[in-house]
Image (cartoon, rainbow, N blue to C red; front, side, top):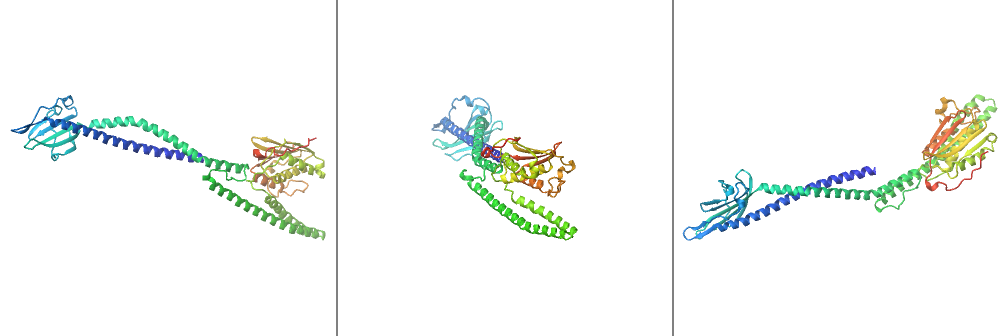
Length: 459
């Protein structure tokens, strides 16, 4: 998600940079064009003053025009550079105009300068400067027009843009890189929060904590407070479920005692009906008690399968059935799964007890790391389970124990425990025997090998 946000921000920043550079390029082009036009107008005004030297005062006529100065720029026909001088009714023009007369329908007032756009000899637009003066004692009107082709200004503008675009492209690339660096650095605290959340999920941290950049501490605080509130609510829910289940166990036990008393009086059918209903209710209560003991999946806990299996085997060996079983355990020291010790004890206890009841004489228990997870396998040498019943084994109330001692909730509770630990329970026939596998997440490195477990060698 962060990566998506980063690239969206980079894309938005790139579009903003491109728009800003485009507007800047157009603005610079307009400013350059205006600057070039001002320079051209200043040059035309200077040339107009030079042409004013053509006026020669005379006593009889007041003034007359002398020969124009020699300038090759104005000698070539249609060169794009033109001048025109009118002294009273006398008209002089540059050779470049050939026989064309620049229009001057709106002459500037005497003593002023006007900048206009006039049509040229071939209809092209001309940048023209008109200087209006008076000459001689008779105050003869003098009008001087200097003009140049505007295409030269447009050509200079295009040349300027051609030189400017590579630099704008380079500037855009540098700004885009700077934007990417800025966004990456700015989103780094969010990546830290994401890593902390991943550690919460994996059990590596109990809370996000406050050792983060100042900008994301409020977010981390809110998440931690939410986790605290949910843990409190889960604790209250587990306690309520446990209290309810414990409250029902005593009446159920009394009901079973009444059923036994009825059976002793000869009310066998009624007693068995009561006992059946009471046993079903007892299975529900036992399962709810097991669920109430499950810890939250966010708790940073670990358990060593080898250590717990060793303790359970020691207990089962003291039972009549367990004493005749050849228990074989293989588990490396320090191997830890991400599950609470109580939960793993309950799950392994149910599986080992189930294997003990169905085994002919041997039960193998092994624990190892496989594909980044912890695999715990329990294999007995019993007859196995009918293939049609495999998928139903974890259903509550289903017991395939031929002796009738099983209550049908053991595997269902194991499935609940493993599911709460984000693991997986797999059951299958091993031909011969029956195999139960627990696939659990490995504990974080901080818990691996925290307490070496001395396992006795199996016989």
